[in-house]
Each structure stands twice: as structure tokens, then as C-alpha cells.
Image (cartoon, rainbow, N blue to C red; front, top):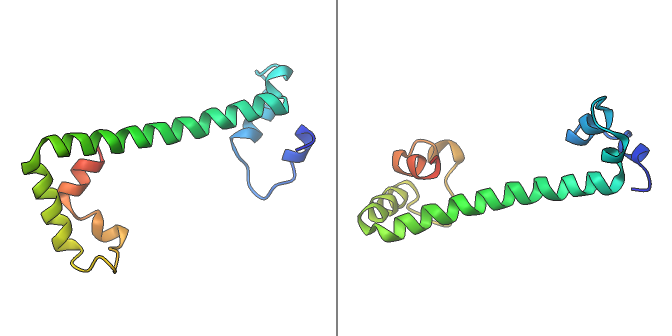
Length: 103
């Protein structure tokens, strides 16, 4: 992007449109460099929190073999053929999987 104006000609609005059009942000917070910093922060925040949640769930399951067995059994029943992935709607019906991934 050569200038902030390059952001205006897009098919859909993003958080950056809101930042650029904000009347409360000073102009130094609307520069290309500043927007790039915000993009990096948003990307890192989304990635790190997801990775932390998945890692935490796996650690707790590995520390509790009985619960891990319950989850694995539920998945084995729901997905008997691993070459045919389950649909998201079907996975949402698995109580143990849902309780493990929603916390």
C-alpha cells in the first residue's frame, strides 16, 4: 500500500475502515505504519489465544487419561472412517468434544 487512500477501494469494510474514519483517533494513529502494527497485533492475538487454548486442552487431557479415553472413544464412534472427515454439524453434537473445546 502506497497510501492510506489505497484502503478505500475495497469490496468489503474492515476494522481498518473504522480506524481510518474515526474522529477520535489522531492522524498519527492512521498512518500506514500504525495500521500495519495494528494488523500484526490482531493477527498475533488471534493466533496466540487459539494456540494457547488448544495446548491447554491437550495438556489437561494428557494429564487425565480417563477423560482422554472418553473423548477418543466419542470421536472413534463419530468418525469410524478417518478418511471421511465428519461434518461440523455432526461434531457439534458430540457432548464431550464440545465441552472440551468450548472451555
